[in-house]
Length: 453
Image 1 (spheres, rainbow, N blue to C red):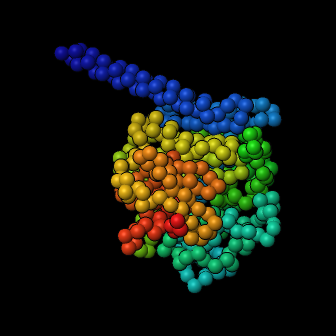
Image 2 (cartoon, rainbow, N blue to C red):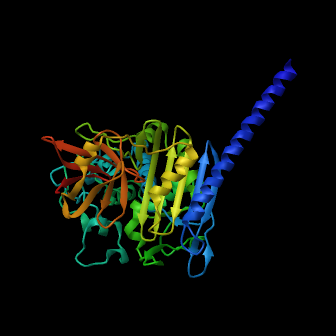
Image 3 (cartoon, rainbow, N blue to C red):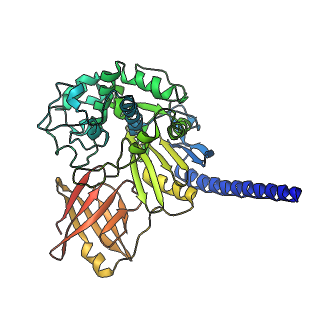
């Protein structure tokens, strides 16, 4: 009897392993087909890693690392992470909170005394959650100065944006701001007595064994670093130069997909931050009016019913990146591209759907009369020259964004909708006095689009 039971268990294990291997082989074929069709060997491309239930099931690269030298991309090459860096900065801050050296409710002025109060208290938590109201220094016109080519000390760059008026009262709204994370990097220096880069190296990169993660600092030679490219006509051009001092704590790290998987794995094993603070980082921040935004401390949090994701993307000259973790399914996806025009959102969705085995965006059918009421031209309240034209095609609506692509509209309710293949975004039509007056688009802040036709 004991022998029969052991034999039965062995057969179950063998069947499970065989079934899992079969699934993974199917996923590999589907991903190969998707990605090889997107990225030609003679063009810049992408490095992709997928892990499922603690095991890397896909790790490949497509395209070229250097067009001039005709060097193909390999899966361990190094890319600029851009805003994925914000996760590292957030964890560094939370480590200091965990040690009792700072509090999330401390004001910016406690560490930077000459930072203007502007009549409001701006807290560390406001900086972490993009609820500070501080202008994004990457959105400021600097009187003809091409700031990307200049080297700044952290204090010099902070001085360049600190006197602009707040866009809103801290804690009342969400608006993505690189300035907040730049300030956090400088605060880490003030509290730790070390350069931001040195603190992150000693307290995050080294403890987690991230052997392919670097700061673009002091002209370092970085083995395996790829070139970044932008689209020009039917071809490509080298990406415009950015001084590493501009990105700093908001986007200055370089890494590869393998180290990004080590990063999330190390966090989830609580090696460098305890569970209490990591859970808070993975929770949307509640504004003063009680509304919960889809951003925590350094991560976007998306929750679409059965599929919750914790993620962050990046975008800078020559590079687009994305890193996504699905906690319920224990699935991790990392996408690093060395071309500005890579379809990051669409790729993220399609790769995730293949691995998860289910759609991430699905719409409901609404009546023709309701669809017809949404048709028209909408202008951005902050810049009326920017428009979105909504038209009807067969049984669905399409949104044409001025100067950009067209997107299918997917309805979640009769008024709430998403744009197909666009992540971290949601929208809702507003009906006033029986007529559609506008829609509110929520992506890196809330934006009002008024119906003008």
